[in-house]
Length: 574
Image: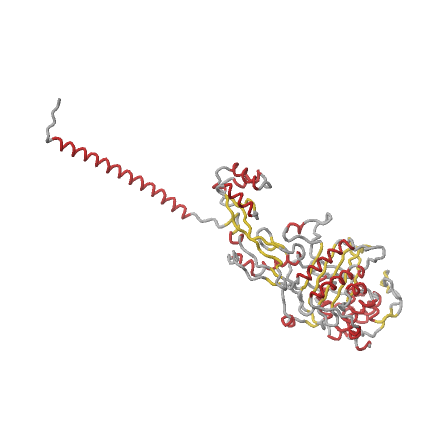
């Protein structure tokens, strides 16, 4: 057995301590080295991530544009026509999705309408952002969130909502799923400042100043309801109407049927009875032969020229022959007619005689003066150019004098009618609010105040004794007047017997004109066995019902005094 001396014990203990100290230092150095590697990896990753440019788009669209808002649209009384609501939309980051099949199955439990194959393709690959489903309900958002699937997220978008539904569809238009205007005033707004604000991100989440329109929603509702009624009452294929303030040119109401639901923009392109492109705005983008309503135009121009007087008489005993064609009157009187009689009996022959006394070239020049050669300057993008021959032959001038052989929009006629009753001043129509002072700066005189007074008399005379009596009965007390037009439609280049476009132009109250209106009813049928099919029986009655309900809303009180009508008679006829 070895014997260890007392002197060796301290040396051995000291050696053990040194060995343990060296081992500890070595371990510390290894830990430090390991930590340095870890920090280097993390730092490198952070640098790498910092160098990656953040994807600010979703399928090529800037997120600021997707989340941009649009200004509310209000009627002239502050009632909402269009507003934005905030809705969640679901997108995916395919590169972060771990199990595509599991994600597809889970998502379809909430959104069963999604096609499995399409969804699998959307969620596969290494793309940054793809749409899955836009405009979800809050309940759908909650259920998808609770699925806990990585790589799915939401963005809050603005969705356009139209509280009135279809009632002002052709005025407002619609927006697409990206909240961009595709029709109507919505598209017009995008051509101005709204698109700019959206593109620079200033419209995102901000409340933009509302847009005030000239429309009176109460009157709009009345017009829409009566036009809708006409489709069933007269079994018509279409109907439309527009009302203007004759002093300012403001559009108070405008509707066209068939229409669409702006809350479902795809409905704009749905066929009607198997026919495509039937949901267009017939007031602005339809051009028509407006029949005998054009006689008001002929009378206004002829009287204003001084070559024709209100007291003149015209030979309407026989039809007028042009080559192998003879133009005659529908239920003609076949006698000498005074000018007021030509108007109230709607004599084609008498109107041609008036135009001939005036001169066909003067007639053609007057149509240019009224702006019938070009589109109406107006905010809606859905506009169409008129079709008016550049020069008039004798036969073309003859048929044009009573509204055949040339086509204009109902808005052209409404604008002209307003000028004919407001002392002769043409003012371009607008969908935005405009004061009378602002309008006066835009006035263009087209006839004299004296001629305007004569036209007001003729329109009221026709309501009392001519083809407008049924309108006058429906609008009793509101001193309305107007002119009917029953025009055979052109089908495949020929006039189709029995297929009529019926029109009624009007103004009220004629003792102090405030509003002008044009109503069309397309291919109406008899309401009953005792009814007729000419314009007085349908377009005229619709006009009367609109006036009867809308006039009180517009601050016009009924007055049944006979002196009002007496005072409308021009001095030379008293």
